[in-house]
Image (tube, rainbow, N blue to C red):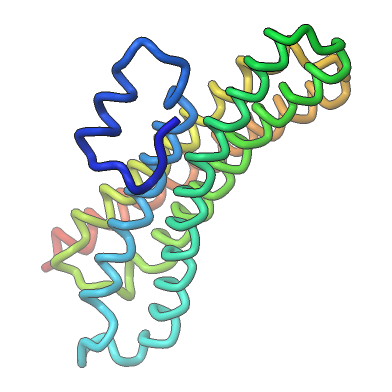
Length: 203
């Protein structure tokens, strides 16, 4: 397992290695954290600008939300690895099916939360597109695209766990929620990028 204190090189090497973690879920969480950092940078260059003074309170609130989301995704990066390792250990120890199903549910819940957090980042990006420093809108686009990709990637990590969850209603609920988040992410990014282009074209 690797945590947020690792260097970029250490994380990449660990992700590429023939070992269970970090895997797709942790990488997805990191992508979401990068989305949050890009959005936060845009706001750092927006808060305090005279021509954006009227938007300062809203931008400060958005900055707080993105900072919290980034911290959450770093924690989820670790939780995803812990959940998978717990399930793997449970299988090795021959735990009962009900217990393995519970551990698998946790493995699905973590990426579900990753997706929800990334969707919130994308929604913040849409909120600030017209209140941010226009010279950093390309960075806001990167924020949005990474957040949208994070939502889509998190769906895969949810779906892969569903067959081993015994509760059919829970399986369908998790599937429906993941599908809904992807649809919302598509809607959000489809609004964000054209809005950015309009402002950029009028600079």
